[in-house]
Image 1 (cartoon, rainbow, N blue to C red):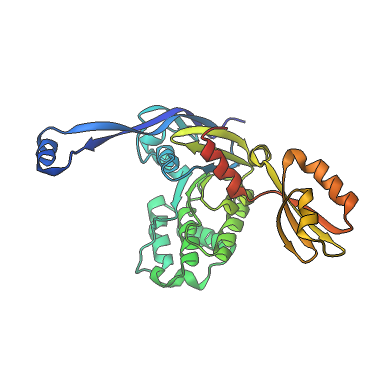
Image 2: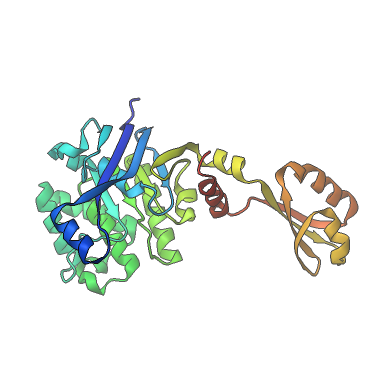
Length: 327
């Protein structure tokens, strides 16, 4: 199967005007401007297969949104090649625009004072969707998103979570094959985030849509993405499975032990880095290379009721990778 998205040595450099302070700097800037290059994306290459959900991770300013804008044709690359469903995005051909959608959590396309359904009718007219197809698609998507009466209410009266669902419905009305999602759960509460994630998972399974997702909420990534791309200072530093990344960069495990009786902190500290002790429950942080020996000692020496070993939070692992700046 051929990749649906191909990115080959993609680069984007901006020229930014440099202005010295003061009146002299202002006059010089007015008559003889100087510029300096800002590299936003540098030599980025990857491929995505049809139907994949891929997480795109990076700190603020890493180049994620710039890359998405090049993939959707909103900005031209400085150099490199991009192909999305066989199209060159910057040409903005009609067939390409019908194949993709871009959802940005901090932007909206719905008209603020109109009911959602009126905005959907406008979108349907833009894409040439018939009334019968509009009713069928709105009905199907609204059911998946648990939207009903909200479609007849002005957008300004919807909650943030309801508005995000309505934005997704509008973005998917033309049944795109490829979804570019930039922080789709930004600012939503936990319940709304879960609802959006469940919808995206169901949509991907039902329509075999390809999804490239950026998010600062690691719960979005862990729930939806088996594969992640990581970008740092404009460079792609990792392309692979999330599971492998966590296994490789999680140097410690969290071990929780419940004992039949209470022990003193001094006794328990001999087994490792004791983080907390609450009655009969002790919590340790154990380096991965010492885990087998530590577990053997705990099981041999203590009367244990329950023992659990868990990974550290995903956020900590990802942060450690970005601090290193390479994989």
